[in-house]
Amino acid sequence: MSRGGPRITTADGKKNGVGERVRERRLELRMTQDRLSANLARLTEGQWNPSIDEIHNLEVGRRLCGDLELRVLARALETNVLWLMGEE
Image (cartoon, rainbow, N blue to C red; front, side, top):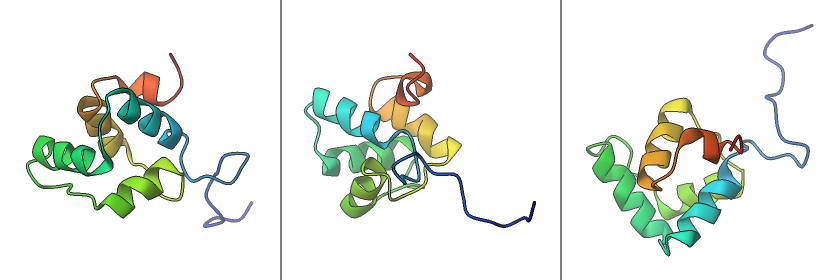
């Protein structure tokens, strides 16, 4: 098996499996993408200050989501990592 091949994607070609849950929870909280971005910037002390486009791309699965980002997303959305991953 060769190395450096394509990354794993969902059955429908998405680059992450959490985007739909991020959007679902954000809407439950009646939070805009701009507000989520501001919360992420605050929680990371400015280390991650995503644009609205970056939030959108994450939610629709066009963007990867790293483990550190997943942790702070859970905090910003007042939930936990397992729920975002669909494990709860």
